[in-house]
Image (cartoon, helix red, strand yellow):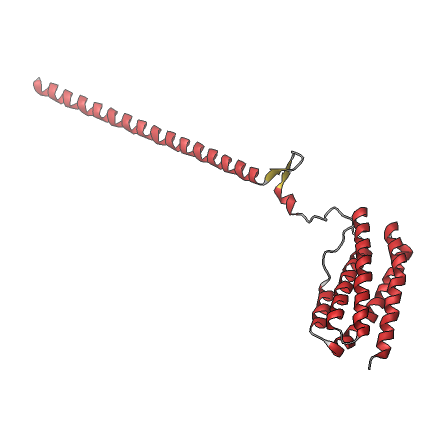
Length: 222
């Protein structure tokens, strides 16, 4: 009888241990799943916070107090200005004539060339200022620099002095002013902006004087 009781007690202890182990396993699994869920929620929260911060960094208040995308600030300042082909060409060409006029006064070999350079600097400087003023008033884009081709012409002339400069400079001025006069006549006859048309018309006599003077200087060159 005692043996039966002992056997029964051992089986009871085994069953209790088995249930305790199963319960421990279930609790441990539940704890692991809960930890994973908490970690996922934390990562999601961190991700959302990061996205919000990035969005805020790309958005800044403008002077009017509203919000604007910072990428829009990278747009060119003249993006809303109208384009006028004549103004673009004449503006850049005027800058070149002023620069070449200054260069002629320092690098020219004859007094005629030096005086011609002084005339170019004065006349094209005044004309350029007037055209730029019209462009600003009319909301037209105005060039800030010469073209690459014009810069190359300047670089070539800067390497010359004296008679060599004169022989390269005067023919260039004849060619440039011949082309300019054709463009100004075209603009005076039909540019879409009335003020630009008037500018082209009133500036034509000055260009014709420059062309005539350049041809006169060339006729005296040996």
